[in-house]
Image (cartoon, rainbow, N blue to C red; front, side, top):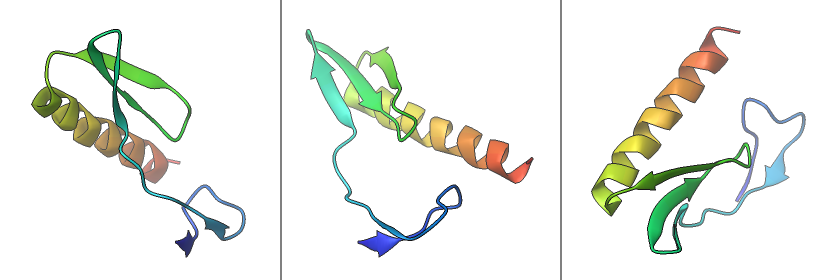
Length: 64
């Protein structure tokens, strides 16, 4: 998908992928900022935290 995010200087090709992964039996999610968040006890908790992370990042962008 060719598109432009708020932080991009020009349109780029972006690919969606599953951001939740299991490392040594524990669940984590990766971010566009190249961080690994977790561990989480189950996929439902990981999904909740993904939504919370996105909300925090959007709030941070709006405050700039």
